[in-house]
Image (tube, rainbow over all chains, first blue to last red; front, side, top):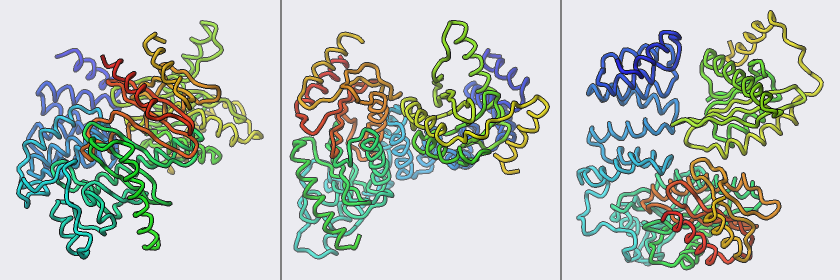
Length: 298
Length: 155
Length: 117
């Protein structure tokens, strides 16, 4: 018996209520002793039913045994106990991928990366997902590939004179759900400009992924956290109210700005646009958003 | 995640600390390991173990500090693969208290330590000065502990 | 503090409007080296800047923008600037409203790139 298994077994024998059962089950699983691992995990969870890491190990064991339904149930339990558990998010992504639900798998991996951007396993899995997932599983399946927008490619703005229905149709055609055409006339109005509320819910505009899918809701959920963090940072450092956050990233520049109380704007611009210009663009969009919100009585 | 307190004055400082630090588990206890407030624990046995171990670690580090001529060490910090723990003592009008914090990768030791200082200051402000505890006798300790646990887990 | 880290902070601190600069451990949010004016709360700057960059990086990843290279938070009373220096450091600067952001950004990104080499 390997040293680690021996030591963990001894620890568990000394104290049967110890949480060492989880580590022991994982060691047994890695050694291929799945039945023993399952027994240890189930026994431990009987004593510790609220132990998120224990359910995570159980899920992995079921996954190794090919029982994806039980694996998914166990990972769901983990997320119920610890909503940001990275192992469970990746596990859910794996199960969804195996079940053919590429969209759900991608969302789970993106959530994992939102929590830990340095998670290389999640990054690799997401790259694999995007490379290998059948086109039919992705939101833009109904469009020929040539029509999929990519960030930075100038997209003709929806006809400003067209009615909301036509503009909404243009938005749908780009893979982004139709929403109030607040930013009509702005370049990439429904693919790179997003208005959301402080709870992380989308109000207007839209954000498209590089493959053309609608990532508005995912982005909105993450941005609410950015807004809260910025507010806290500015308050603690006695900087007053925050006005803008500019993030220069590898393939795009992002500008985030509050729009009155309770709303937030995200503008994404290609790296070819100077940051100063992106800020001016965002300021215009903020003015438009502010006027629209006032008109809504918000 | 639940927050429960034995002594009500500790509740607001604890809630704020948990919110700001994003801690997963917090125990506020006496140096003897008696729990005054907790956040995140689902089972009494886990809380008992954590408080006993936390108090023991603080006692051991205090003894080591004396050995090398230090009055006390500041906060202790242990980093694990997925979790970290922060353990520190603070003095309040209510007496010396220990705070054990367990946190995950969604926050950082920098944030926990930063907001721990604010938590300690809030405890000092909130703690009632006129209720200095009587020394707890050994035979009272178990009864005291059981009463605390009953309150914390509302049994 | 190592000479290279110190030199970088010195260059950044010479930019007009700077109140302080520091190297921060990205995961821990702890200061590694710092050069701060009186009254600048170094621990708070380090912890909060690291947390903000983590959240911004998560959002940037979620929208397909890729790895973040520079973050600038402008507030009514000053500006916080952060340049990630992979794999595990950040160079952070706190400035008042007069700061020459362009120059500060150049110095910070140069410092981050030098460390990566």
